[in-house]
Amino acid sequence: QPPRSCEDYWGEWKHCRGLLHAFHHYYTHGELPDCGRWREDYEACRAWERDRAAAAQVPAPLLALACPGLCRPGLLGQKSRSRGVWKLRKSPPPDWYLPLD
Image (cartoon, rainbow, N blue to C red; front, side, top):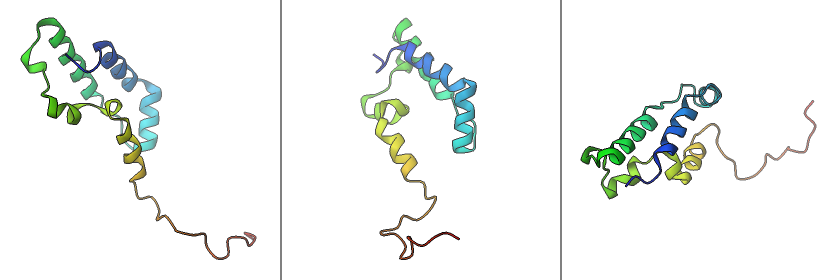
């Protein structure tokens, strides 16, 4: 049995392919989103519902690895925090209170 309903996978795939999501993802990550995983999950879910296909089953230990972002919501926050845009400092600079001119 899939961890989510097949309509959830279809909805996520449609959302991923949407113009606003594609624009936001491109702006944030510099590349278009890869929505193929949602489509594959939807097709596997339908195959499982249709004829309980063995190819559509995911072994329990691999389910955590195979499940896209929403199944592991903590992963999203960790990924965005791990990007090294600038070095975090322990305290403010000594002249932080001076005017900027």
